[in-house]
Length: 298
Image (tube, rainbow, N blue to C red):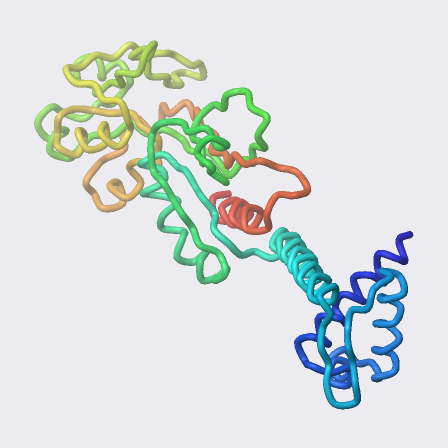
């Protein structure tokens, strides 16, 4: 039976070539067959189907109504086969559209700057990126890859660890000139510390002091719901903040912010993951993108 199906797909290709080329000999040249081999294939088809498909003379070739119906069906089936093979090939070749979701700050500062090199490496891929601090449902939003910073919720998705990010206490040179530079964690109790307004967020900043970890309760007159805003408030001289290092790496390098109390940094880090639907059918474009991020962010 398996051999019959292989033969039938080949017969369909030969018959379609006859119709498109207009003769047995032209179809034979296209398919690498002799005219007699093409004739035998058509004869085998007609015998199996019990109908005449082609009226042929020495000078002309015409399809019977049954031949026209078979040709339409053969073209449809061959088209479906081609599409199926193309879809499978897309699983192995990095091309097509990939939808990416990332947080506003990490996406803007870390992911977006990497896209140019990625697209040069994989010119067949189109990246559709959305930046939002709202966690999206990958299936509902038709997202291929989501970049998450921090602890992950339980999920059936594959989580590929890309790296991690530490946290840094920072302030602007202007603020420090006005209020003084803290030398030990307890000095923060006399400073305006910028907090987060997340639900259940506690104003506790961890430090390592004399070989042990402490949690210092800080206070201030302003709170924000994201690290980028905290960093901006710090740049404006409003107070001292503690945020993920990726938020402030550029500002520190440029001298707009100053890292504080690094000798007391407890070394706590936030993991960074790429979430995607895994399995053997994961498109090559998704694997290529995640592998690229892992390479760059490790």
